[in-house]
Image (cartoon, rainbow, N blue to C red):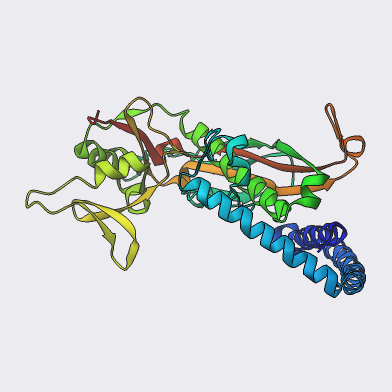
Length: 383
């Protein structure tokens, strides 16, 4: 495969990824997807033509008998070099001194390096808090929602025969406002990297930008939760009080315990008076854990420490119904634009032969009902 064929393959892959992006439900644009697929077809035809030329060129350059003999001699020479390198690695010594692969001039140049260009990924745990909160798609940049205030009703008043009936208290209302903000970022990539790499760099960039969106949402949600005063839960009894008293019967049936890896470790060590662990798989959901709190089993959601870190030994616990607590307003899902001619700051894609990937999303996060959750912590006793 020559350089031109690699460039065409990269272009085909890139256009295909873009077409898939515009076929996803939240980004659907059939005109753009169709146009991109038409370009892919043309690029495939060009690739096939280039491949035929390349194969014809290879046939024309088929070596003669003399050339084969010369190649054989070169192979023998290569084998001799490899044998020499093997002798050197086994401690072969010449008068000039000991040869070593650690010194390039003393033999290091002939030792091959095992370098892979395949993009490997370290294993990571990723969690999205969007699954826990109330998500609403909106079509304007700002708005309001009306809610009936929570109040203590007193009931009717006893009235005697012929007595006057007194007025009851009326329901009160309040509004929650949102105002959409824009969040964005970009990644410049040289066209040489896109063309010469034998890996799908474009796909890696798309995945990276998609994960940046997850991290952004997590950050905004946690920032809003942290606006509520933290409670020192101290121990299991504090967790029970948060569920039974602070949240009460309005939210306890739908509550979850959200914590991090350190919190999971703490919960996983709790036992009842008979020595049985209180943390166990949820009934019928063996992949999900629950904490036994009296007669109830409260689902436990674990967020990696990387997304919700422990602050100076204060292990975070968010207890309650986050669907009622936090509202995520989604104005526009992440849109990714790719350009080879754009200018951003001091970067000029056309002049510097770059491709710039730009991601933009618009959203807002508001606190819907602060009474529906407890933001708490338990201080770790581990060193």
